[in-house]
Image (tube, rainbow, N blue to C red; front, side, top):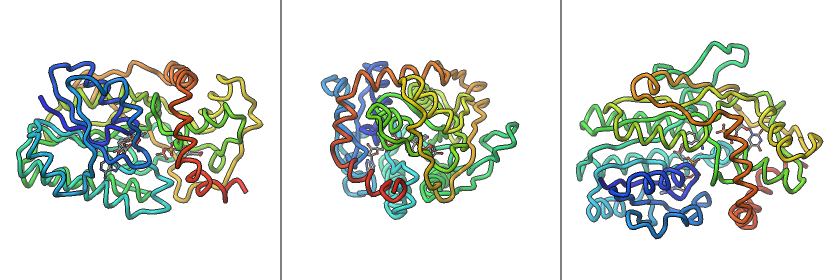
Length: 341
Ligand code: NAD
Ligand code: TYD
């Protein structure tokens, strides 16, 4: 089958391209990515010469371009990872999140409607469910939990999900949606918590922890997410939503302390800084549907996954140093200058 993977130069999309190119030599993978600040072709070096892989630079919200690509490629499936993905950026500039995450999704769906498609898979997030209280460890997000978004990022992702469901119901597009918890692992852009803390701790720089560091995230290794998306793409039921998560809840402070211990760095690097506005308290996924119906099981727990991830960052310093020396440094100053003082 021929699969258009959008956002394949980003963190999760890049890992997914590696996964598909390696595991399905008989399939054709077309990676469509605009290469925004978050897109990095160096992530694709291990597959760039593979015969079943091709990269195309383009914008999922550019209708003429997307229709032209469908005309040329006639894909059997689309997996849409392309998005603006950082909550803090969505607070600074919500408009680009509407354009990419909502209009980009509807443009892809329109192309599927025009040219026909075997499967459209939307990569969504648990953030569409809003947050859970810190003192109710018994509560988890299920696929029936109402959408209740907090940030412009999560609002744009929830809107996209609703359009996907509308195109399924109204136009009969064969869609599936996955809603995953926070990912970590190789090729994660160093503006997100885990790679940010690893790269800064290695440089003995202060580590900005929002508020008191008590917010809880449910961490899943990116390879386990990729395996879940692949399973849903090939075996999931059309029209369905699947939650993806591995019951690995940690407070942000615990995550930072784990990283510091693993690197042999002191906790005195931690700085508690002004909290993120509207900061979601706790995310926690109930993956029972995915495990029960499709037999998915994560390979990593947080302890083994974070060890593998830290090792990867130590062994691939050139990958993230090149990001840090580019546009990222300017972004970092804009974002944290006022917080760190
Ligand atoms: P990322 O920011 O690392 O990558 C996004 C990619 O999309 C980049 O390569 C970027 O160049 C590309 N892109 C952006 N705008 C585009 C456009 N208009 N046209 C084409 N390409 C464009 O994001 P990520 O962390 O890899 O997340 C991928 C997807 O997974 C997103 O949809 C996100 O909402 C979802 N998700 C992420 C997490 C997480 O923890 N990172 C968890 C659950 C779901
Ligand atoms: P992030 O990686 O941005 O993912 P998300 O907001 O989508 O969950 O942040 C993970 C958690 O870490 C979140 O609660 C915010 C917090 N955080 C910090 O405390 N400091 C930071 O510098 C960053 C980037 C995040």
